[in-house]
Amino acid sequence: MYGRIENGNIIYGPISGRWGNKHYSRLTDSILREMGFKPIVTVEPPKCEPDYHAVSTWSYVGDHIEQVWIIKENDPVEPTIFDRMEAQILYTALLTDTLLED
Image 1 (cartoon, rainbow, N blue to C red):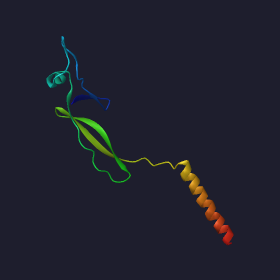
Image 2 (spheres, rainbow, N blue to C red):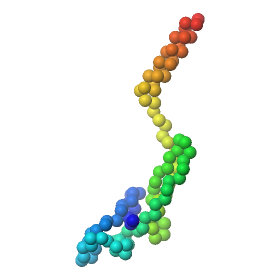
Image 3 (cartoon, helix red, strand yellow):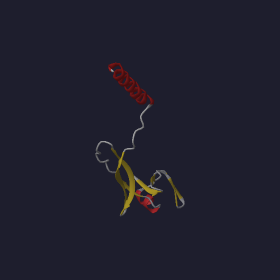
Image 4 (cartoon, rainbow, N blue to C red):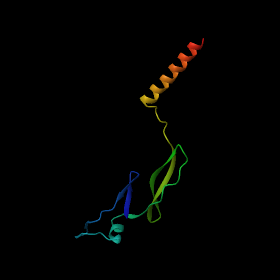
């Protein structure tokens, strides 16, 4: 697999196309290199602790492109309407029990 990096994203090399005066039904590795594409090396994502996730980025490393993983903390999750309703019901029940005991 061949590609190049543009604006932080991987752009994969074409399978077929024109190069020079010829049309190729299948571009060879040497033609893709001449076109500026480099071999792509993918890497399995690392295991993450809870509340973290791995984000894939790409980097030129010598004569190839390598997948690099960055560990990031998950964004806080906004409670859903159902979570808020349940909290309100529990609060009301607790308040009612407290008032009835007095």
